[in-house]
Image (cartoon, rainbow, N blue to C red; front, side, top):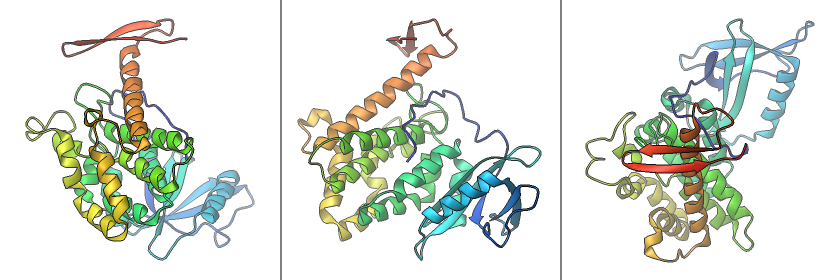
Length: 315
């Protein structure tokens, strides 16, 4: 799992600097091999069923094969390859990952996202879940095309934290990864409770797909708070989870709907989710406040509507 990143962008993200391809991973083993000039080939099958042969250097070739050997595919999983190339065809970056989605299901989500690295981390997080019913739940959420295309593209807020396209996914990942780090450091919390809290953190703001567009609130969002949509949007995956793991489904629903105004959280991991949410929000606000400020600035203020936020930093 990649380290936690508190994102700083306040403007729409570029998906990448070069030409990108994504598709099923083709052949990149002994069959293609390496030339005498220090280059190797990998292949990729795109959404139009076209096979592309891409030249990579020896080091990338070795690392791609090592990554492949570390991924143990089951019968219902597919292997995907993403590549970013410079104008001359040089591979700048690559990611190899697995998912139960087909390319037909994955491609619209990929097209909608503003930052592929965040999308990659989302798939990595889901596939890292050890509790099988919980992994099934998260996979089912990923298969919901309308939900996911919105989840990866809209901001987390209109003018507040992570208020740029793709901000909701970034904020959600930050919350999930920080929650994961926190709960794993607490003694006597089971793996099951740890992972339920991570999934709850990941989808705690999923209701915003009904209340926020890419630039403004929806008509529904002007009337109803996003939290009221959370369980409604997740009802089918929750029903599946209920069938295979009733206690887990109940715990997840509790963590998704618990507020501090309800009193003491019955699960200590609920506090980790709230803490992660506040930290991610605070970091985003500080980044907004110091945007375009010289490095020697250690104090500034940020106006959001009628509210002013005063922020400091040490350089």
